Length: 203
Ligand code: PRP
Image (cartoon, rainbow, N blue to C red; front, top):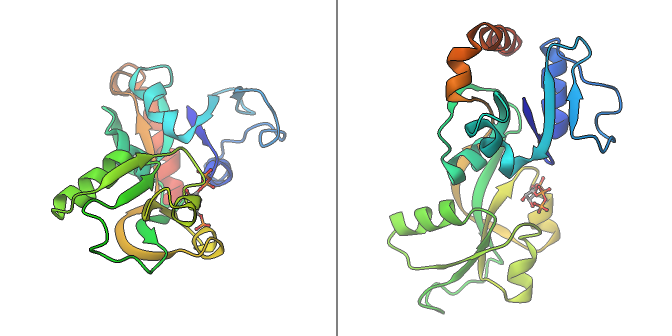
Protein backbone atom coordinates (compact mmCIF):
# COMPACT_ATOMS: atom_id res chain seq x y z
CA UNK A 1 0.00 0.00 0.00
CA UNK A 2 1.32 3.44 -0.93
CA UNK A 3 1.17 6.00 1.88
CA UNK A 4 1.42 9.75 1.26
CA UNK A 5 4.26 11.50 3.04
CA UNK A 6 3.34 15.02 4.16
CA UNK A 7 0.08 16.54 5.33
CA UNK A 8 -2.00 13.35 5.80
CA UNK A 9 0.81 10.95 6.74
CA UNK A 10 0.28 10.98 10.55
CA UNK A 11 -3.49 10.76 10.16
CA UNK A 12 -3.01 7.81 7.78
CA UNK A 13 -0.91 5.98 10.40
CA UNK A 14 -3.52 6.67 13.11
CA UNK A 15 -6.31 5.49 10.84
CA UNK A 16 -4.44 2.28 10.01
CA UNK A 17 -3.66 1.70 13.71
CA UNK A 18 -7.40 2.03 14.38
CA UNK A 19 -7.94 -0.70 11.77
CA UNK A 20 -5.51 -2.96 13.65
CA UNK A 21 -2.68 -2.38 11.16
CA UNK A 22 0.40 -1.04 12.91
CA UNK A 23 3.65 0.07 11.37
CA UNK A 24 7.09 0.05 13.05
CA UNK A 25 7.46 2.62 15.89
CA UNK A 26 10.12 4.61 14.00
CA UNK A 27 7.94 5.00 10.88
CA UNK A 28 7.65 8.79 11.20
CA UNK A 29 11.42 9.33 11.42
CA UNK A 30 12.92 6.55 9.30
CA UNK A 31 14.44 7.20 5.88
CA UNK A 32 13.38 3.72 4.74
CA UNK A 33 10.83 3.86 1.95
CA UNK A 34 9.44 0.33 2.34
CA UNK A 35 8.09 -0.86 5.68
CA UNK A 36 6.19 -3.95 6.75
CA UNK A 37 3.27 -3.93 9.15
CA UNK A 38 4.01 -5.48 12.55
CA UNK A 39 2.04 -8.61 11.67
CA UNK A 40 3.86 -8.91 8.31
CA UNK A 41 0.57 -8.93 6.35
CA UNK A 42 1.11 -5.62 4.55
CA UNK A 43 4.05 -3.89 2.95
CA UNK A 44 3.89 -0.10 2.79
CA UNK A 45 5.77 2.25 0.53
CA UNK A 46 6.20 5.90 1.48
CA UNK A 47 5.89 8.30 -1.45
CA UNK A 48 5.02 11.94 -2.09
CA UNK A 49 1.25 12.48 -1.93
CA UNK A 50 1.07 13.54 -5.57
CA UNK A 51 2.76 10.25 -6.63
CA UNK A 52 0.43 7.84 -4.79
CA UNK A 53 -1.98 7.46 -7.77
CA UNK A 54 0.86 6.65 -10.20
CA UNK A 55 2.14 3.77 -8.03
CA UNK A 56 -1.38 2.41 -7.71
CA UNK A 57 -2.50 2.94 -11.30
CA UNK A 58 0.60 1.15 -12.64
CA UNK A 59 0.27 -1.68 -10.10
CA UNK A 60 3.54 -0.96 -8.25
CA UNK A 61 1.22 -0.81 -5.22
CA UNK A 62 -2.12 -2.64 -4.94
CA UNK A 63 -3.65 0.13 -2.85
CA UNK A 64 -2.97 3.62 -1.59
CA UNK A 65 -4.22 6.45 0.57
CA UNK A 66 -4.68 9.65 -1.34
CA UNK A 67 -6.43 13.01 -0.95
CA UNK A 68 -9.34 13.94 -3.22
CA UNK A 69 -7.30 17.02 -4.20
CA UNK A 70 -4.70 14.79 -5.86
CA UNK A 71 -7.35 12.49 -7.35
CA UNK A 72 -9.18 15.41 -8.97
CA UNK A 73 -5.92 16.88 -10.27
CA UNK A 74 -4.56 13.66 -11.80
CA UNK A 75 -7.80 11.77 -12.57
CA UNK A 76 -6.04 8.38 -12.31
CA UNK A 77 -7.67 5.17 -13.58
CA UNK A 78 -8.09 3.46 -10.17
CA UNK A 79 -10.92 2.22 -7.96
CA UNK A 80 -11.91 4.64 -5.21
CA UNK A 81 -14.01 2.46 -2.93
CA UNK A 82 -13.81 4.38 0.35
CA UNK A 83 -13.88 7.90 1.71
CA UNK A 84 -11.69 7.57 4.81
CA UNK A 85 -13.13 10.80 6.32
CA UNK A 86 -9.84 12.14 7.66
CA UNK A 87 -7.53 14.80 6.21
CA UNK A 88 -10.55 17.06 5.83
CA UNK A 89 -9.68 20.40 4.25
CA UNK A 90 -10.85 22.81 1.54
CA UNK A 91 -9.40 23.71 -1.83
CA UNK A 92 -9.81 27.44 -2.23
CA UNK A 93 -8.93 30.46 -4.31
CA UNK A 94 -7.12 32.97 -2.07
CA UNK A 95 -5.57 36.37 -2.48
CA UNK A 96 -4.60 39.51 -0.62
CA UNK A 97 -8.18 40.73 -0.59
CA UNK A 98 -7.24 43.87 -2.50
CA UNK A 99 -7.48 42.42 -6.02
CA UNK A 100 -8.96 44.70 -8.60
CA UNK A 101 -11.05 42.37 -10.77
CA UNK A 102 -10.36 44.52 -13.83
CA UNK A 103 -6.66 45.10 -13.29
CA UNK A 104 -5.41 42.43 -15.67
CA UNK A 105 -7.26 40.67 -18.50
CA UNK A 106 -5.95 37.28 -17.30
CA UNK A 107 -4.93 37.29 -13.61
CA UNK A 108 -2.09 34.97 -12.69
CA UNK A 109 -2.89 32.03 -10.42
CA UNK A 110 -0.05 30.22 -8.63
CA UNK A 111 -0.87 26.64 -7.69
CA UNK A 112 0.22 23.05 -7.15
CA UNK A 113 -3.03 22.09 -8.90
CA UNK A 114 -2.88 23.55 -12.43
CA UNK A 115 -5.58 21.29 -13.85
CA UNK A 116 -8.10 22.02 -11.09
CA UNK A 117 -7.37 25.75 -11.30
CA UNK A 118 -7.73 25.87 -15.09
CA UNK A 119 -10.97 23.89 -14.97
CA UNK A 120 -12.43 26.07 -12.18
CA UNK A 121 -11.82 29.38 -13.96
CA UNK A 122 -12.74 28.01 -17.40
CA UNK A 123 -16.13 26.88 -16.05
CA UNK A 124 -16.67 30.46 -14.88
CA UNK A 125 -15.65 31.86 -18.24
CA UNK A 126 -12.73 33.70 -16.66
CA UNK A 127 -9.40 33.87 -18.49
CA UNK A 128 -6.42 33.24 -16.20
CA UNK A 129 -2.76 32.43 -16.54
CA UNK A 130 -1.95 29.43 -14.34
CA UNK A 131 1.56 29.36 -12.90
CA UNK A 132 2.52 25.91 -11.60
CA UNK A 133 4.65 25.81 -8.42
CA UNK A 134 5.30 22.81 -6.21
CA UNK A 135 5.09 24.28 -2.70
CA UNK A 136 5.02 27.40 -0.50
CA UNK A 137 2.31 28.68 -2.83
CA UNK A 138 1.24 31.36 -0.32
CA UNK A 139 4.39 33.34 -1.13
CA UNK A 140 3.30 34.11 -4.68
CA UNK A 141 0.89 37.05 -4.11
CA UNK A 142 3.25 38.85 -1.69
CA UNK A 143 6.08 38.70 -4.22
CA UNK A 144 3.96 39.60 -7.24
CA UNK A 145 4.41 36.21 -8.89
CA UNK A 146 0.62 35.89 -9.05
CA UNK A 147 -2.47 37.81 -7.94
CA UNK A 148 -4.24 34.71 -6.61
CA UNK A 149 -3.46 31.17 -5.49
CA UNK A 150 -5.39 27.91 -5.59
CA UNK A 151 -4.40 25.76 -2.63
CA UNK A 152 -5.56 23.70 0.32
CA UNK A 153 -6.67 25.28 3.57
CA UNK A 154 -6.94 23.23 6.73
CA UNK A 155 -6.51 25.43 9.83
CA UNK A 156 -6.15 28.65 7.80
CA UNK A 157 -2.87 29.44 9.57
CA UNK A 158 -0.73 29.47 6.43
CA UNK A 159 -3.09 31.90 4.67
CA UNK A 160 -3.34 34.16 7.75
CA UNK A 161 0.38 34.23 8.41
CA UNK A 162 1.01 35.24 4.81
CA UNK A 163 -1.65 37.94 4.68
CA UNK A 164 -4.10 36.06 2.43
CA UNK A 165 -7.86 35.56 2.59
CA UNK A 166 -10.20 33.05 0.97
CA UNK A 167 -11.83 34.50 -2.15
CA UNK A 168 -13.73 31.41 -3.34
CA UNK A 169 -14.12 27.73 -2.46
CA UNK A 170 -13.50 25.04 -5.08
CA UNK A 171 -14.05 21.75 -3.22
CA UNK A 172 -13.97 19.91 0.10
CA UNK A 173 -11.25 17.28 0.35
CA UNK A 174 -10.73 14.12 2.40
CA UNK A 175 -8.47 11.08 2.19
CA UNK A 176 -9.60 8.17 0.01
CA UNK A 177 -8.58 4.54 -0.29
CA UNK A 178 -7.61 3.78 -3.88
CA UNK A 179 -7.11 0.33 -5.40
CA UNK A 180 -5.37 -0.84 -8.56
CA UNK A 181 -8.00 -2.10 -11.04
CA UNK A 182 -6.27 -5.45 -11.72
CA UNK A 183 -5.46 -6.07 -8.03
CA UNK A 184 -9.11 -5.56 -7.25
CA UNK A 185 -9.73 -8.89 -9.02
CA UNK A 186 -6.43 -10.78 -8.63
CA UNK A 187 -6.08 -10.05 -4.89
CA UNK A 188 -9.77 -9.99 -4.11
CA UNK A 189 -9.44 -11.86 -0.80
CA UNK A 190 -6.78 -9.55 0.66
CA UNK A 191 -8.52 -6.42 -0.62
CA UNK A 192 -11.88 -7.51 0.79
CA UNK A 193 -10.20 -8.07 4.17
CA UNK A 194 -8.65 -4.61 4.00
CA UNK A 195 -11.96 -2.99 3.02
CA UNK A 196 -13.76 -4.85 5.82
CA UNK A 197 -11.43 -3.63 8.53
CA UNK A 198 -11.51 -0.07 7.18
CA UNK A 199 -15.31 -0.07 6.94
CA UNK A 200 -15.54 -1.35 10.53
CA UNK A 201 -13.24 1.47 11.64
CA UNK A 202 -15.43 4.02 9.82
CA UNK A 203 -18.79 2.73 11.11
C1 PRP B 1 -0.49 22.57 2.71
C2 PRP B 1 -1.22 23.53 1.83
C3 PRP B 1 -1.11 24.84 2.56
C4 PRP B 1 -1.15 24.39 4.01
C5 PRP B 1 -2.54 24.63 4.56
O1 PRP B 1 0.87 22.74 2.49
O2 PRP B 1 -0.64 23.57 0.53
O3 PRP B 1 0.10 25.49 2.28
O4 PRP B 1 -0.86 22.98 4.03
O5 PRP B 1 -2.63 24.25 5.91
P1 PRP B 1 -3.19 25.25 7.02
O6 PRP B 1 -4.44 25.87 6.51
O7 PRP B 1 -3.47 24.33 8.20
O8 PRP B 1 -2.14 26.25 7.34
P2 PRP B 1 1.96 21.69 2.93
O9 PRP B 1 2.13 21.68 4.40
O10 PRP B 1 1.61 20.37 2.33
O11 PRP B 1 3.33 22.28 2.34
P3 PRP B 1 3.73 22.86 0.91
O12 PRP B 1 3.25 24.27 0.86
O13 PRP B 1 5.21 22.77 0.89
O14 PRP B 1 3.10 22.00 -0.14
